[in-house]
Image: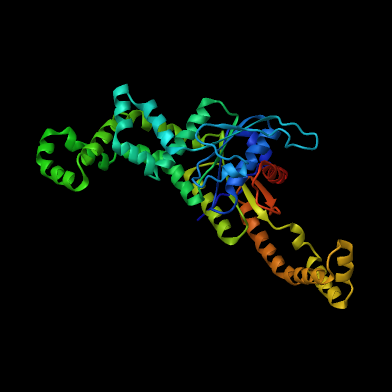
Length: 394
């Protein structure tokens, strides 16, 4: 598949986030996408100022723990950054966080688009509606897009950073508005509602519905038909809103950030997602490479230094000298140093593979930022700011 060449304008993540109002962070599972989204939001709130919201639509709900919060939901919650910034820097803005609540989102949509109070109350009380909003996984995608639109249109935030589901599911998210618009014109919707609109067909099909009621339960199909007939009364509002959401994704104020590690599978997935963004005409702003190995591993002379370290260990006194300096057992020091020297070749080979994949990914986006593997998993705001500092510096 042909890919677009790298845009000529290069900038850092700081300039990219300063210029945008909506940033959608995408990537495959396990690459640290949720943590990167939260780190970028925290860093933007500190460095750029204004009100910054990080919104997760990932059902895994990992963002709360990464931000040190016990829980948060559909309503935006302010995250305190006070006392976390050192080196004389000031916190310029506010950090807010929210998690998508599918049921609450659907209820809000019905209240907004219902043409009258009677239709609103009938839909909200319909048993099928309650099942759809509580159980249909794919309804989550459309509600997520609606939520983005609502937050952006409210003007309450200067920057909204969205943590999306893993990349293949993120494509469902991007396609959700179009699917909603198509749904209202679908044959399925007409098939479900026509028998209840037409007296002649109702009489002709009455035996079928009587049998269905015995099998599926009393009034099951009536509930379905009633729901979709009520739903059709809100068609214009839903379709118009779906088109607005599609326009928001391609708006110059919106951009996408693709997160990947430099392992083969996630890097391949990142390339696939970049291609899909390109095919849909959606703007790629940056690629973030997470948990990369240090460049020093590939530095000239590094391999020779590892060989000389192994030779010095064989010669005798190096491990004992290191043990005395560190105040540790000499045998333990020798085992550790011997393992490091022996494993260096393997790590260097991995680093060369990473370098090749980095070159490929770097050719796809105007901004490329990277962060090293941190000593431990990020589970609090301090950790997010450490990661954010790395990403800010590129």
